[in-house]
Length: 497
Ligand code: ADP
Image (cartoon, rainbow, N blue to C red; front, side, top):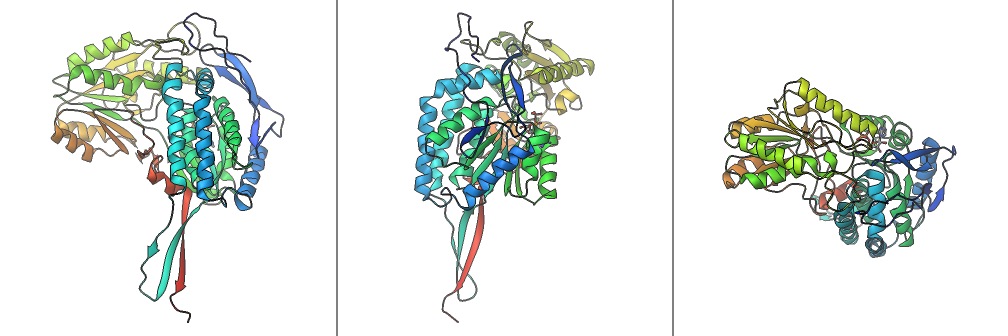
């Protein structure tokens, strides 16, 4: 199949889908059942192609391959420098194929191409280089003991890592998961999200071209309750890493404990506060708060989806936020200048529209938007609510769409208490020029990331993860290596007894 990119302003040539099968033991293969499922273009709802539908039997095949590659294969046994060279070569191939990869990602997910091509794929490349750099810098300690013993620790890979990723950042999540797992010498079975199976297959082929041995990285397309659950329950998987909704995270943890107590890290939902203080430069705050919500069609776990604004600047902030949302450029994500593409699919599109209706019914003021955009595909108008109260569903539930909920606050104590009154604790934004205010908020907010006068800064070295029901563990940065390592204590007498 080929993307039908006929309109004038479209900025890239058509892109082909090359790989639709499962990737097991270095080979593209059909699902054991022979079944396939469709993946759609969210711009129109049209079919892109059918891909192999992996289920339990395919997970078993993939885990078997990963197990063999770990227990007997070269990957954990080669020098760390050799491993890092393969990962660096992969990064070079990502750079070389940047635009095709970006086009495939946009086609399957609806993200603006200018962003996938200029930001996301280059960041993915950067992440792999970052983790390649870690591969040969992982080592243990020499530990003092009370008795006459020599004690050392070995930091060993944990084994076969199962990874389940969502559709909102298909390749970024692939990089966050696969990068550290492979750098530490593990082998991987990764299940992509059913909405966005294409890009991971394409890049994993490149990984093999870079010299990755067969079985080290296996990619299964398929659904959560079948393929995903089989991976989380598998007795031969040593660790599971998941990014997705809090509800599914609970299931993953349960499946892991019911099976073999595999190690679990979870990256879950959020309802992150973005706090605009009274001393803020309003124009800058409006712009940053806007992108904190609307970026990626609002489909971000750490979207700044509760915009708290100090009462003294509230009215001006509302007017300007409304005007900014009305100026947001919605359209075909392959066109130049487009800021917002379609939502991922019909189900999400309908869920968001129903959240908007609930906002109206609960008495919030709809400042702009509120309806679908255009007549085809899954586009939604940038929507702004003011007069939002803490207990309304639009202030407590994750909407995962282009909907800004603006709340008024009185003073720092008020906003700290309300910002923290959430089951979630993923991130927060703080907009102020007062260093005391910034310090107070930074220490009081119970969240995994505080962005001060910035938002969505995601460098490879910055750890990311949730407090409370937003997750367990940290990804990226040095902190995430622990997720993929285990510590062996080695003890020997100083003198033979
Ligand atoms: P969303 O609601 O954003 O689609 P999910 O948490 O349902 O979030 O999906 C994230 C990932 O989890 C996807 O790859 C999906 O297939 C997978 N998934 C969904 N349900 C399950 C499940 N019961 N067991 C394992 N994985 C699942």
